[in-house]
Amino acid sequence: MALMISYSDIENKVVEILSVGGKYDRDLIRKSLNKYIDGNRKNFVIFMNKISSTPEETLNEMYKHVVEKHADFIVDVEKQNNSLSFNINKKSLCKDIVTAVLKKKEQFGSNETGNGHTMVLDYSSPNIAKIFHVGHFRTTILGNFIKNILVFNGYKTVSINYLGDWGKQFGLVLLGYEMFGSEEKLKEDSLMHLFHVYVEVNKHKELQQKARDIFKEMEEGTNQKYLDQWKMFRDMSIVKYKKLYKKLNIEFDVYSGESLYNERAKEYANKCSFATKDSDKSIFVDLGPEGVTLLLKNDGTTLYITRDIVAIQERMAQYKPKEIIYVVSSEQDQHFKQLFKMAEMDGYDQSHFRHVNFGLVKGMSTREGTVHFIDDVIDTAYEVFYDFVKDKENVLNKKDTALQLAISFLLVNDFGAKRIKGYTFDIKKQATTQKGQALGPTIQYTHCRLVSIGEKNSNMAAPVESIDFSKIQDQELCNLAYKLLWFEKINEMTLLDYEPSRIVLYLKDLCNTINSAINNFIVKDEEKSVAAARLALFKAAQVVLGNGIRILGLLPLNKM
Image 1 (cartoon, rainbow, N blue to C red):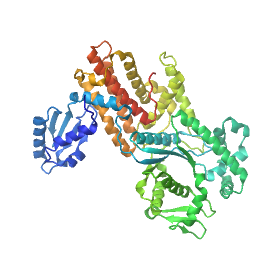
Image 2: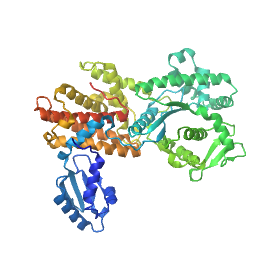
Image 3: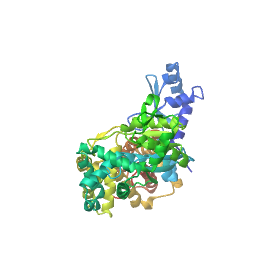
Image 4: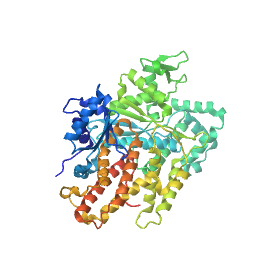
């Protein structure tokens, strides 16, 4: 039976070999080792000036040691410009890699970093009485992605949808509904109607003070009519949002909101030991390099940061998390610097808090009514992909498949570049022109191809222990096996920076390799031992591809 193997095993062996029996520092070698997956570069490259004061001498010694004593494991060795580059002999690893994947299945590539730890995630957080737009889409899918990769690596997670359900804007919504609202239209489409009244009331700048007055009455609890309407709008919003989250394959553990912390925020501001009360009765905190921030306005109303700090107190006490992660756009960078500094002054270590930011979707404004509503966006993509699958006889549930393709397209389109990069939104043009060639659907198509190969050749399947992997000697198939092993490294790196683009790029490269291998190496009608080995490799590829798809937040498709 093959030994279980991981990418760490490969890396550890390479480090040990390059240390030349411990002559060179192993930790320094590990830090200096460049690792590559693409076929244009060698698997490993190390520059001698990073590990030695006599690089030329070290290069010659290391080259000789590798070539003479480890040619069975390290191949294609080259020395150039004080660097040593080489590949791993992948032919000797196929059985170990495929066995590891097929034994671990949905856990392949994961680690146990999170065992015993809880992570609290704060993401999505739309403002109630407003339609969910593409800007909210980014925080929602990124937060869900982070949750998935944390769970994959053993963490317990608590996902919180901290609704924007308090503040002056609700004075505007209530005033807008009072002036321009219709009960009939509210019943027809609550969020769309409230969006329209919000846009309308924002055209009247002279109403801003009236809106502030309404919100002050809400804060003081003196106008039950407004509070009842606000609660109704909040409940309507949550019902709508839950329907949307279901489409996106997303669930939250907790629905919370700023309003829950309003009274405690007032109490906190008045009792905060490091706060200062101004002559106008406002309360502020000097955060040093992070500037000065208000905790309480002179009219007694709370601010976002005040409600956030008491939410931190509750979350730290209730969940005792290793970290609270806020998935919010880069527009709020300064807010979180101030919030985390205030938490530190309150006695918490800043290592418990992390802001995972992202770039903005450009060209949208709720006040001006130029937003792209995510429901409309999903519908547009759905129509394109329903047209794509409607005549495919092998697709039994065309509507569900079209929806999953639409979500795959939208999500991978967003995750395709580094999260800090913003982009201008034009989904209809992209969906219509790319269709099945778009990366999200291509990843799903590749998974479907692998499922189909397994179903059509099930008679060739054999227990992995009995398979003769010497039948896989073609370099292309060996490269595919090695790329499967790389998933462990991709996961490890992504767990550090929560960068979904890394997984997307890995899956893109993996799909290219898989599809080329499928085209060049058939299973059907091959000699049984060859077919069994190839089938096992393709099954392992399906497992790894499915793991990556699920971490992104998608459901792997079996037919399309």
